[in-house]
Length: 412
Figure 1: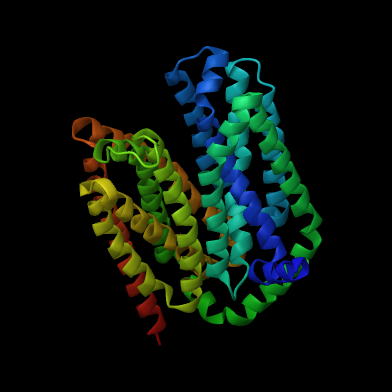
Figure 2 (figure 1 turned 120 degrees about the vertical axis):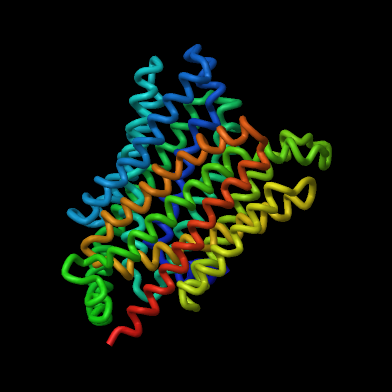
């Protein structure tokens, strides 16, 4: 029975993809560990929340910005070596956090974690993009791993920290990240040979795409639209996860099984991210089985009314529309990332995925700040109404991609 399950698992998620997805889950898990342990860290170092917030912001900025040189590194030395460097480097950097003796060394450790963590994404996306036949599905599996890491990690590290202290949470992640890096090292040779085979397959199929990419190896307009969309989606994500708990508290005052509204609000965010993992996987499958551009228009159009519904709803209706919003939102990224791979030559994908990640996590991080301004002036419901305006840009970009695709295919 165990052997059968193992064989099925290898068919659904090939071994290298499983390892990279595991690393992606740890990468995003490490990203939210500091926030989950913020109170305990502040108590030990006797600093206020403003200082702790500044330190977290520094790490987050590095995490987003470093993706650009990380993409260049991926194109220069290959995604396999870059992934190994990112995973083992993140694990070693977490040890710096564990050994921090003051607020300065803590900030340095978190910035190192952010640096190696940001390098991971361009390499991971470039690896998944190398699978020509199941590119969207692979992107969906990869994305689902990130969702699971963000959803599950806070509960795990807070449980560990309650017994063994906050440093134990970082020790656990350090060990897991180094372990995942060693796993990647163990398949590195087979990964390189597989990559050469996939590159040959892509060359056989790429004559039409090479004409679209041109001499620069990049189709500039659709790639710019995809970067714009990812920046907007990152903006929506950051605004949502920041203000959804408070919005729920303000609009759904009831208890379930003895849990109060504050606890339920935390469960709601976790449930949203878990629903997102399901959405990533389903969206990836649909991206391989249907035409991506029309699918993305449908998903973009659905985002707008769902965000309005989240802003206007209360009680159980709010829970239902939030779940629907998470499902639709996370169905889109696998197809956008797969499209980016089509419009960019293989030797340039690392740097383009670096720009995409910078848009999502760098530019997108301003969603919290803008949402805060709106919430301060109006209320949390207004935050989601404002975010619906950003989703309108996603519709425009998705329509532009469809028109571009149609023009290219009809070109003589």
